[in-house]
Amino acid sequence: MFRSLDQADLSQKRALVRVDFNVPMQDGAVSDDTRLRAALPTIEKLRCGGAKVILLAHFDRPKGKRVASMSLAPTGGPLSALLGAPVAFADDCIGEPAETAVAAMKAGDVLLLENLRYHSGEEANDPALAKALSRLGDIYVNDAFSAAHRAHASTEGLARLIPAYAGEAMRRELEALEKALGRPERPVLGIVGGSKVSTKLDLLKNLVTRLDRLAIGGGMANTFLFAQGWDVGASYCEKDLADTAREIMGLAAANGCELLLPIDIVVAEKMEPGAPARTRALGAVESDERILDAGPQSVARLVAAMEDSKTLIWNGPLGVFEMPPFDRATVAAAKAAARLTRSGDLIAVAGGGDTVSALNHAGVAADLTFVSTAGGAFLEWMEGKTLPGVAALEV
Image (cartoon, rainbow, N blue to C red; front, top):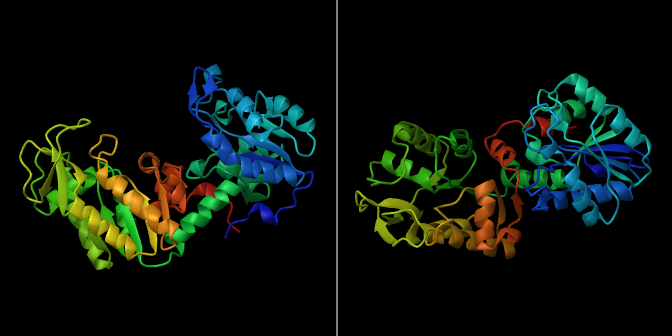
């Protein structure tokens, strides 16, 4: 259990809010305000409750130095426009500039502090920096799940010093993850794709002990097919991990998790948009062909598994979705997941950078139960790891 803002007395409180404003920039201006928008519900809830809202964030990797191009100042204007209210800015996150700006605040005011990572103590979780930050606030609110897998001064250290709560975006994320893996409705189906088994070993080993079925796609499926003795032609394949793949298959069998590997594949001689694509049965791949997508029989079996499941958790595409026609399996699976979610037959939670891009490509990201943009934090949670920024909020 974690503390939420519904449990907090907000009136006249100085609320230190950790947000994720590590936004895309182009020519010194915010080019995508998605992360700014994600913070609005928490900011508005605090303002309506009569709190003074003090925003803490990082931008890029200045490594403890003041780098002008990594200032958070350019985010203040776009945030103010979204809020329809002024957003003040302090050119440091601690010390006299921050203290003076906070002292001038009234209930409902919003203040953005300068880049936390201008101080090396942020990433080092320096107790002195956490203490300096704590002097600025009465309560702490973490609304940055994307940074919760790091034990930094603003995500873990500060939360130990003053009463700590989950913001609205954090609350939604944690509730969705609990539905997906914590206490899910069964049967639970997982989809894990992407190119490399080596980057998702912990993820695969955790999921096969917790899911009823796990579909493996993308380049990593080639490694599993190779481990089963299939010829994968010129496909990307981590052949040195064949024994590891067999270990995961054995672990899945021991835990009653059915592995769904491709039963047919789509191949081409070159990985480029519009390349002539052919569907092959397993074992029929030519030496100069690359496996670039799952075939229609594999997709049909996966959709049937979705229809037989109550919960879906998805990370990674099934093929090279950025290059049509090798997006067909991912798009078909995404549309099936969206259809079942809309009808109320499936709880579908997805996350990870490529996954979000693939769901947007399929036009269905808004139709799933929850789509996390947290990247590394989402993956570490799926791996079964404790996230320091979340643990600090637990009752």
